[in-house]
Length: 166
Image (cartoon, rainbow, N blue to C red):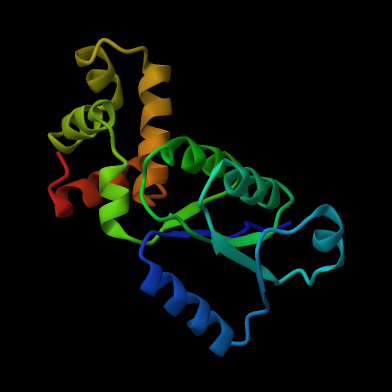
């Protein structure tokens, strides 16, 4: 199975515009989060979409992602959402569409690590400076890449520079 699409949008009007654009492009869309039997009977190219309002919605959307379906998620606000995005990131590549959501989801530790890398430090140098094991720094950077929508550490550094994140 190829890489599944998980798109997260924070802005309601942009979310609806994405749904409209996908529909216009002929994408098969289903509102809500699928159950097991719906996943088995749906077309391979179906994208499920919906709003995350509570833990039940998060759980249902995460199960859908685990089942391997494409998702478009409207995620209003960020309180308690970072762990949800982290979980989604473990399932597939998450594309966070709204820049201000991505930027707000970086915590101080991630900004510190990213700042050192922006200044030219290697991952090993940055981990020593921050008194972290190299593995902890790599995991932190993996989370940072997910939040920024970057495919590599170099791309994350470029994004950070261009937005002045650190």
